[in-house]
Image (cartoon, rainbow, N blue to C red; front, side, top):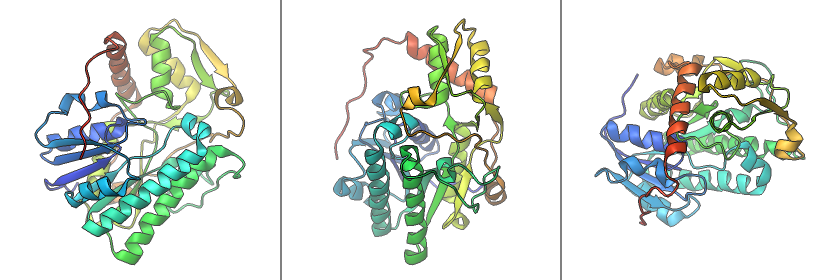
Length: 341
């Protein structure tokens, strides 16, 4: 797989789960890393371990603020655009915020990137496939979203617009831009506060709380280790041939959510029981779920030779270890101060 030559990389949303892992990896690879995050869902503790690195800089701010974003983009060769309003719970509670944040934010990033000739990886989502027409999902498949009266589809629609804008910039401006559709990326540091299922179930199990499964639990997902996802994102950033295309990034190891809960129950040694909760109780009215979400990875494997290497039990083991440490850590542990441009 093509390596990304050492350069200055800007990560929007870099204090979030995926962004903080990406920042750490890029620093290890010799890059200079700039992180922009408004900390609405990102956390300073995610970047605490490397906040004083000489090649790292954190700026607290929103990608919707063009001045700060433009200044950082002017220093950068590559932008990894991860900043977004994400998570089913957040989308259901704040659909207008979701639409504005995702669409405006991506528009600002693309404008800055074209001004300063930056290469950009725009992270999209498997949500774009909506209810799905067939499985596994291929990048050129038709998509089927639910009606606009169901706010659950606001996030999917916003990420679809992000992709349209990105590909339009390539077609009209010749910019070096690529979209990565992430499928359920998981690992240490992921928050369960916004609907991410694995950290939520793990915390419930470790706290001896009921392990809550929404619906009947027969819906299936494929979980990709964040370390595998990083390899794909960095590989796409380094590849000239990737520009102007959309790539699935995920795993094909499919698991039903009820079986996932039972596996977490076993791996944690928890005595917690499993409790089923109706979707309406979990998220309120207007929610629809996808029964299956499985990616076709042929396109990215053909271009980069990339495919995930870590299986679900290894992923769960890493999350369980991280959550055990988090539960044992004092709540008032010191965090780094946020810097300003």
